Length: 435
Image (cartoon, rainbow, N blue to C red; front, side):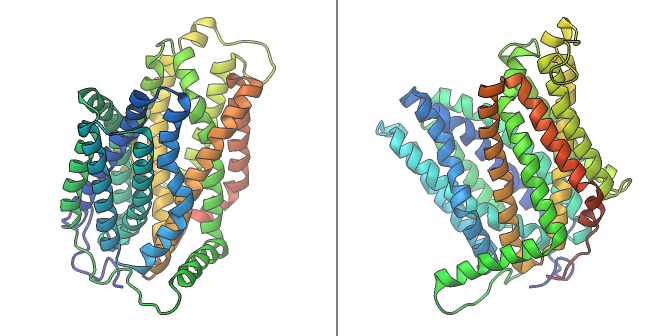
């Protein structure tokens, strides 16, 4: 495979290779956001039980745990363009089926859940291929800026715009969000087909038992991740930090509704603030990248994340130390929106900058032939950590009370920071590898 700097189609984030990829990312993330809201809402319109509604989320997330490693192995084995096109074609077909079922009046909860599971499975393979494509169309020196722009549009479309659009489309009719999502993906495929890629990127020829070969590919990726110390330590850090953040995110609804003074709108205000911060992070990253080292930015981000847990602990309990006297004024205790909303804008910026740096490190460090498998492993660590954290947050909240959980998540985040502090320079300082 030729590297990005060796092929004439490889361009900067302002060139013709990145622009269609950015547009593709915008449309697919908009569709993801629409479906994240529409799936549970459509199920709720058919069955009001909490179990049925929650199962819509589970159906979309479970494929990540089942198929991420397989998808990563295939992304390194077959044409990444073909894999992305085929996966998105399956998604369009599934969405079309749901739209027809809703329009014809034969939609049901089992059908919705089954199709959502199929859509989540196809998305695993699409994401595995798409994550591995960027280094083929952007020079190594431009990866940070490119990733920042992708993070910005992803957070904006998936968290801010998509769920709102999805909720309103459900109001227009149960078929509308699925038909609209199918059209979004169709438009995204048109853009994806315009991305100039090296002619044989990721293609390998093998003979023998296919299942055994795929298992060997997955094992090779796992061995590389574990043997490469900076890559391994970054994976561990990402997983642990996502446990603490997953618990925070699971309980953030209580902070938004009971501490901001905005009632039920408080939770939405905090999520919107993070989305705005993510959009700003797309603009901030290229400016801070040239002024501070990656290790410095990672350290600042981790300190800020620990501070976020502790701020929520103080504002939720009214205490500056666990079990201490209540010292937070009542007005701030019950009306903290003026503190939390701007803080979560900053958190969104941190999330975009930190995510951009960690993604860029992986793309520059990992050889192209292993990139699909390693990126899939990271995706599994990110989502697995978040899901584990959500479950842990719920369990601790039922035992300790939701207000006290932030002390525990803050302690976990602080312990992770202390463990990785001295290691961050070696993690962040990587030399680009040949394809």
